[in-house]
Length: 207
Image (tube, rainbow, N blue to C red; front, side, top):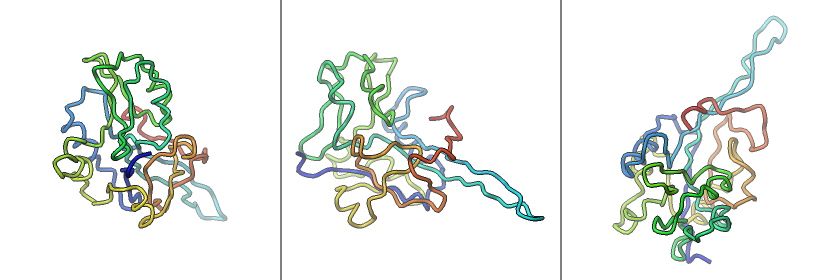
């Protein structure tokens, strides 16, 4: 049991989809092309429909920024054959020991969020480590510092939930009961639940 559990809070009502968090993460970690530890999903759905003589707009859209949620019950840890993935006791951050990782990709397949990603240059898996080097220096994670709209925050997840609520079942993510992700949201007015099939990812080639 972690002494505390770090997590993210994202106010989806104010996210503009600028991708500054995504760019800052890639710049800080110098990840290869196609490897995104933080991704911004563009979600859309609905349709126009006639109502009498009027044409009614029933479409919706919103953005969701996502990285590893450093889950309370991570699906990646039990499937790792070399025990390269661990959860730090002091803050609950899930990390990959590159010296033990063999790049089998089992963690990638197990994670419902697609957080672990294969690094072809090293032949190992990689993912968000909560900018642990920045945290050690008393700095904010790169993605948080870069957020132009100031809607991405981090801290003890219990404190974040006490302040902002416990909403987690937002499309395109699965039911949070599966891995208990440590991310909470303020929904956008157009946000739909995890199981709402009227929504779709509009930028699949990017994420």
